Image 1 (cartoon, helix red, strand yellow):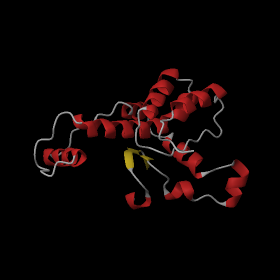
Image 2 (cartoon, helix red, strand yellow):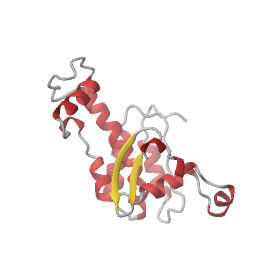
Image 3 (spheres, one colour):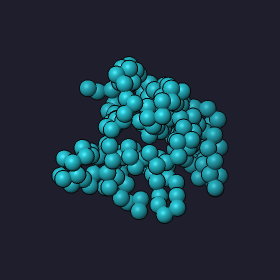
Length: 176
């Protein structure tokens, strides 16, 4: 159930027999790690989240790196207008929202960075330099996020150059 998920719900996909979700933050199953499991295989909430999100189809996660909320559709157009007007701060929620607004850009950058977190590990594991670069660009353009959680445990192809590139792309507002 969605109540079990914390923070922002970014994406959901129903696969045969299960639901796979990308979230901002951990869900209860990520944090439910026994001491034995933690000691035997080194599981952490971040590594469990990364393993869970690995099941989400990569081509869909990669689409999230290009999200443009102002171009989004809704099953009910009034919902689309209300959402976009809320984002831009328009009190007339039923009005046609502006086609362009700085708040759309801000929100797009935040969402793209969230999707990038879900694909960084896979980009390394698959030696996918193009996806790695797109994800780093998305992170660099996020002007709001101050703290980041990365999970590269058990990632065989991770090289020092990856960490150097990642650190060089963290936005200036990132706190130590």
